[in-house]
Amino acid sequence: MISTNAPTVAPREALEGVPPLRRVALVSNLCPHYRRSLYEVLATRFELECYFFADREPYWNPLLPALEHGDFGRVAMRRVKVLGEPLLPGIARRLTRARYDAVIMNLAGRLMVPYVYATARARHLPVALWTGAWVHPRTPFHRLTEGGAHSLYRRADSIIVYGDHVRRALVSISGVDNAKIFTAAQAVDGRRFSVSSDPARSREILFVGRFEEEKGLRELIAAFGIVGDPSLRLSVVGNGSLEPELRSAASQDPRIRMVGHVPQDELPAHLARARFLVIPSITTPTFSEPWGLVANEAMHAGLPVIATDAVGAAAHGLVENMRTGLVVPERDPTALAHAISLLSEADELVSSLGAAARTRVSAYTFEAMADAVEAAVRYARASRT
Image (cartoon, rainbow, N blue to C red):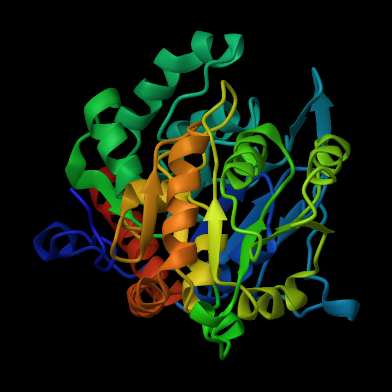
């Protein structure tokens, strides 16, 4: 079942009598740039304190004044490494019912996840898990801990998911109660990417992402080689460990341009020049594409998107075959080449899919995400109470 509507919220009767949220702790590894706007919206609804335990952004309270150069206000918290994994031992003193109404935590951090969860449970704090995982990794470590992950999902008071593809996986594979899952479909700042463009007039195909195996760039270059149209160009934006290999492969085809890294503020200009975006991600033992936010960015610019079925935005239904783009099987250069050829030859199809994409993605906002997150936290609180 494909869902393209607003995020799911809790039934009204389930939240009757639940007092408004006062203060909520959010524990995550990083604060990436694409999350800041969501956290700012949440901070208008309740007092939000964020603990980031990776090497950057260790602790951020968005209610504190910003520091110079656009940095976030911070409260120092000692970080230690245990067996190479980061840990904030002092967080246990702060996670109390006297301080917080609930805890939101994601599943990054091999030590922080059990540490925070056990602390919250010992203090009888409601826990809302936040996850984008819809295919469990197949590394030896993840195989060993898979049963524990499923148990954690079932025991959490509520779960916030990136999209309905994650919801389906949790219900069918982990046996999670569907009623406690809340879809906070991924969003970007659409105003930044709502550029004036006419994609049907362009002959440029665009890829934006990391140059890593899971992004499917080998398959994309192979597929583009099958497409013989000499008027087409493929612009590859990004960087990563495969860059030398990819530059060598691209040098065999003069139609391929390796752009390299592009700052975020320059990305809208690249979208404005493109005909369509390709997201050729593949599933690997360590990674499955949880969403692919560049799909939202391209759709706000009025571009159709070609995505593989390994891309979360396609599995959820934002990128929908022959409605807002094309969806092809992963690891299939021939199918990908056929999709590229189709959109390269059909100007009217590009225009109609791009217009539908812009309309569809307009519902994916930070306010809608915040609605789902807030409902999930209130549901967790009601459940724990």
